[in-house]
Length: 181
Image: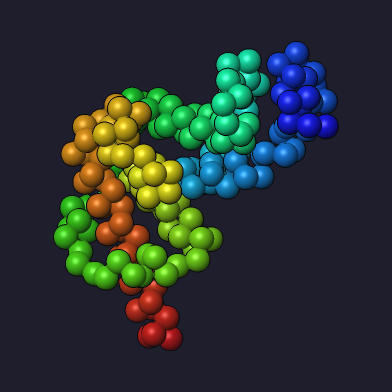
């Protein structure tokens, strides 16, 4: 089945086409959700909510790019919406400010494999995790992030900087522990 046929079937509400679309894109989108969520269960809930939006809004897909890119955008926007919703319900708990001043070489983060980096990202407080993903992984500007998350641009910049510092600290701590053994 071609992408156009799959898309037409999903627009018509064909369950088989929806299942095919889900099977095709869910693994990649789950990887994205895992970066934004603190726990696996949260990532699964995020994925489910994102695909509900995909299927309810698929008729708005303009076909001006790949369907996979549109699905990805829906997933990232869903993650941002969940963050905004939870931010309103919970106080923002952050890592203490002394982490912000850590001075270290950035090569530590850049040299990590993806799986190890995702594990560190998941350990970040939600605000840091969200900004880090949107900026470093998705490529949004701080201005775009500020609009998406309903925060100031300077908050986006500081949370990104603090997220990087927190990840570096986690890695440096692990490296010291490994050397001690």
